[in-house]
Length: 375
Ligand SMILES: Nc1ncnc2c1ncn2[C@@H]1O[C@H](COP(=O)(O)OP(=O)(O)OP(=O)(O)O)[C@@H](O)[C@H]1O
Image (tube, rainbow, N blue to C red; front, side, top):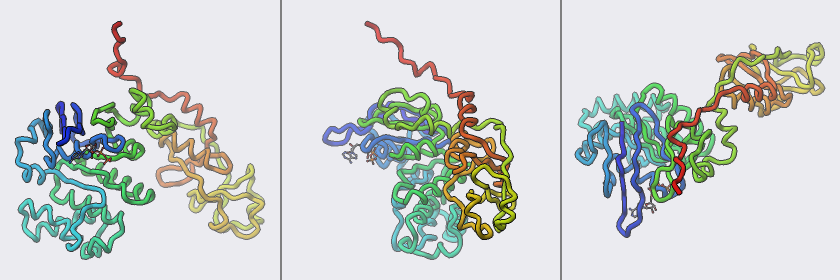
């Protein structure tokens, strides 16, 4: 566990970067620090591994003040990932990753074996090991950065905007893989971002900081979306937070409707036999591929003829996915699949809305209700 205890950081010239910050980052959890530019996120992170020392207050790692641990020793037990990965350009990927265990005193052979292992873990096996950083895409460089931080198997990881410099699609892939990895590894992670969507997706807990380095609210994402504590947090979270909160509510047993389907390759004559209400769902091996308007079937159905862009929802997945599936289907019938991606049936938006109406929201914590001001 990492504990900030009334931490203050004033830089020369008097600017207060972090102001009386107290919070805990629990063992095995991802705690995200999020807030606008200049609110002290990076400064807070760097005080954990003593790249910066606080002006007052202290940070404890498993109840030991980090100020009592020599910086080099402290950093060997803490993985650190930054934006643009910060790789050594003249070393191969393998040597970049092996650097950290080498610093920790591992033999060259053991460090290299470990480097291969972690590269595999982050999805960069084989050939990538002998390349140089400039021969990798931005997303691949970030993976190497994560692999390097994991190489000495630290229990704590500090991550400073690790996925900010890559395009949105790659960012989402990296986030998904990071969550999968964390489910396996269970590290104690403090993660800095200015992107509230990233914070809500990745954080077990999210700490929202205000400019001036003050903690505005620390809560689980679902709670934060449901009960922002003040106007600053509510503005920062943004407008569509009611919809985004649905990502944390599991869908109940919907009354799924059977949906008539046709297979890819179905001929116009066969397609005419299928009953449909405006749109026909096309499947392969029971897995939905897309929708098609029956009047467009003038040749056997090919995948290029299908309407693109609709999403599918997993049974008992988040309500947000079910609502999105219903709204994004051209038929307005949301496609629901099982864990193997096979069609179970469809659900309409009004049925999802009824489920939303019945779903419980996180109850407000009495500690969040400010005491009445005395006159
Ligand atoms: N070495 C320094 N000397 C003086 N002031 C500094 C120094 N480092 C940071 N600051 C100031 O401290 C405040 C917090 O900076 P910090 O980098 O921690 O913010 P941040 O929330 O990480 O911002 P961003 O999202 O833009 O990276 C800012 O006002 C910054 O200008």
